[in-house]
Amino acid sequence: MARRTKRLWTDEEKRSICLQTTARDVSVAQVARRYSMNANLIFTWLRDPRYAPQRRAEPDAACFLPVEIVDRPLHDDDCRDADDLTHSAGRIEIDIAGGHRLRKGQVENQVGVMRRRFFVPRPRFKTYAELNAWLEDRCIAWAKANPHPEWRDKTIREIFEAERGSLVPYVGPFDGFHAVPAAVSKTCLVRFDKNRYSVEARAVGRPVEIRA
Image 1 (spheres, rainbow, N blue to C red):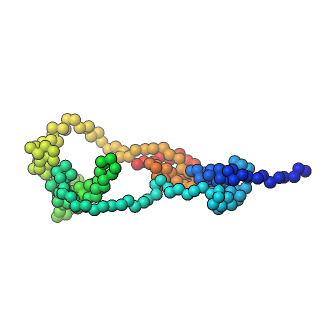
Image 2 (cartoon, helix red, strand yellow; image 1 turned 120 degrees about the vertical axis):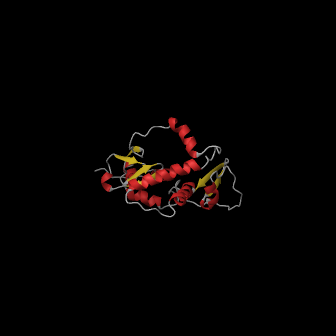
Image 3 (cartoon, rainbow, N blue to C red; image 1 turned 120 degrees about the horizontal axis):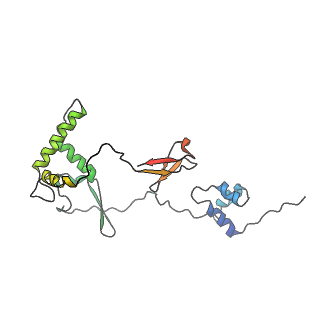
């Protein structure tokens, strides 16, 4: 019976094997099977700083950025609507390299403007149909009475009527999402838009569709 000899691994081989365990969706057991070796030996190497790969920060890891609060006057190109000038305190602007500017809070600000404009004091209705009919009348009346933010000599309603012929006609309800096929990992995770999300365990190994 032939005697089994112990294989000797060089330091370079140990570092290479340990590095393979850092690949996405690759386990230590899978790497051990590649080299017909015991997985516990790889775990021993991973605890050794001579062979363990350097830990790198996750690309999606959260981090803090330096923020500078400055006082500057608002200009017409920043806020074209009078309501925006009055209620712009909740908006955040971040200047990015290259002359770009990221604005946060504009949607929330506009929602607040609409609430104050049409729902103060809060109206009450028995059905959604009554609410929608009332809101449509209020919106049309407001559009007829207020100038367009870019063409100040015309009302919002006048510009809308001029552009109505170029609008796509409404054909009925439609899906408001984008469907993307995806695969679920063994750890019940699905990847979408550079992020990973947990799903039910029964979806593992089955084709799924992400709607976003």
